[in-house]
Image (cartoon, rainbow, N blue to C red; front, side, top):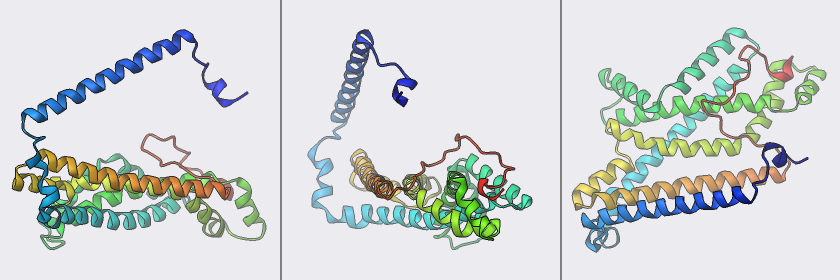
Length: 296
């Protein structure tokens, strides 16, 4: 019996008609909302050609506003991705440790930073850095953005590392133990490399979250794409078109990263490897007090 037939019954004629009616109503609602939005934009003269002309005819729009904004977004994302990967690897391995205090401390750190909103961490870090002159004034916003993104996404990556190791067949670790390796050597030499390979698509997918959340930096005066788009809208009196162009740029970058994750997942699947999905705060937890399944 297939999984599909177990999970739900195939809809009958009445259910299919009901679904068709609901789909039609949904389309009508979406079209209606779109019409209202376009009408309001037209009434506010936001669809006039002169509002969009600077994006095509004025090089300063890209040179002085959008490109610096893109660089600010990409810079914060790249730094955060590298630091989050290191953070996640360290605390992910810590959660797999057979030393109870290390495992408990790592679990508390990961669960705490997964539970705190990214924006709150950015604001808190910005206040600490500013009041204590930790960095130069022009670096404090970037440092605060990177801190918030690193702590949250690093905690998610740590959970990916832990779940990746636990998803491996038990025989992988038992084979290492049978040839005289210690549990720590089994984890570092056998389990972790396989888990990192398996979690690669989910890791790339997490980078999409890093890229999007970098826009929160506008709340602490970090000049990224969203902030530069606001400045662009004020300079050329075309705020709405500027935000729409910024949204298109964000969507394009996130789409390319998503396609990269899909491509990596397909390639790993063809090689016969198991891939993982990104772990969110609501994911089911494994017993925190348990040692890795392969090191019993």
